[in-house]
Image 1 (cartoon, one colour):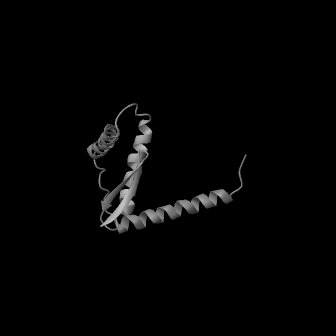
Image 2 (image 1 turned 45 degrees about the vertical axis):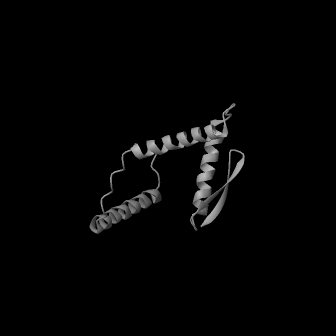
Image 3 (image 1 turned 135 degrees about the vertical axis):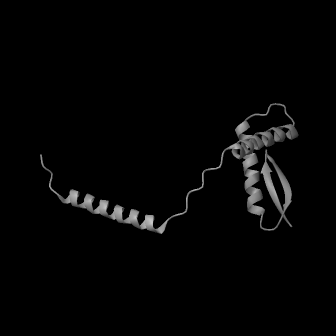
Length: 106
């Protein structure tokens, strides 16, 4: 076990985490802190209530991301098609080079 100190909302919080997870937990803490900064002034809200609102906003963002449809899987590459596309690309490149070398007719 390891401990990480997070600076969130102007205060330091020490949290325990598994060894090797320190950078991940620190990044999550920065996300929470950024969300609090994004919220701006919290008026006379308590620290707990302010953190609750930040957590709700972050949870809503996660919820929206999970609700998006997954992108369609791309078909596996076919070596014959890849070779043919490379051949066509090389041919087009040779044609373009030939056209660039020809003098312009006006």
